[in-house]
Image 1 (cartoon, rainbow, N blue to C red):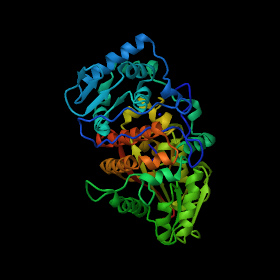
Image 2 (tube, rainbow, N blue to C red; image 1 turned 180 degrees about the horizontal axis):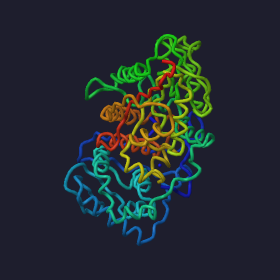
Image 3 (spheres, rainbow, N blue to C red; image 1 turned 90 degrees about the vertical axis):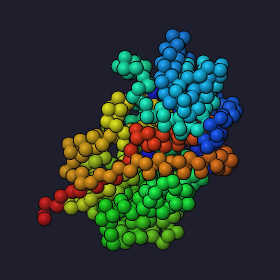
Image 4 (cartoon, one colour; image 1 turned 30 degrees about the vertical axis):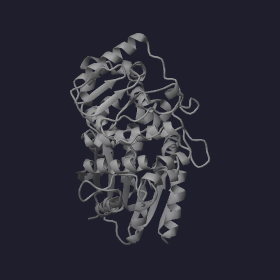
Length: 450
């Protein structure tokens, strides 16, 4: 999954397996009854989480404005908001418990939605069903801030830091911050295919045992779109842990797969060798901008989200330049509404600070315009299936919660676990509300010789 307001300190950089890791927070069981509230987390380690342990100070006036805006928004939502002093707001629905109203409003006043996420990490607010609360908020996102304040976005919103630009060196750092956390961490909540992108189910609800087949169904559909067959020359942009390359090679294709994650490269190579397909697959530590050669097919799964708007033209030109005449490119991409993308593309968000530095979701309109204006490709097909991503994320989130002790054993502390739970629930809510979607694209390149 490749799904960003600014702070004085950079996001903690967790590492794994005996290395120093940013402190995680215990992931609450979001399936507990609505009458129960998860216990407050233990104290936050200030060395690992400086902005969570000691939030930036907001002026009294800014905090008061934030409190007024937040309370006005919550008052009209289908939520049951319970404050520590006994006050309540909302029209009824999933429970949201504000344990420390002053800190909660102060963080939002200082850093907007970054503060909202950090307040959860600090345990200043909680929810028995976190995903349900976040789904309500995502579904009403456009209404949460009054139009008069939205017009002042540049005043109160934090700007995306220049250090997160996805230049070749910046992209390596950004990718490493997420994908080099720990292969063992990802293995705890993903299925045996180690696929970290939306699965394609036959029906809902699904259980974790159905994930491998659903992931293979997704991969096979992309390979079919690209017409990958025996003898095909395939370029994969974004290796993950190698499952797509394995399935392409099993069809008889010759695959060159590119990644910027050393952890992923090492495990992907190991899995490919174990399958006896090392002669058909090469996994290179290489930026997509450095790719060479021509290919019958290019496949890229949820990698464009890490490219950044500045480099979308370069990304799509790479697909064009690497495809042989008559070639086909299959791309899976998470998308967001165009108006929200335009409003937030220069904003530093909680996701950008803690989960995907440098990330930005494109809109369907942005993809179409970039392909039209910068390539010789044609958008031949586009299929959306966002409900499948919501289901995929639910299964990942539940498995992550169930294995909290094992996450802890890897060296990830309670604040990290709480952060990761918020990220998975936040993403799931985006798809459940319809705010986010996921697309499978087919791009084709005309063969002038025909």
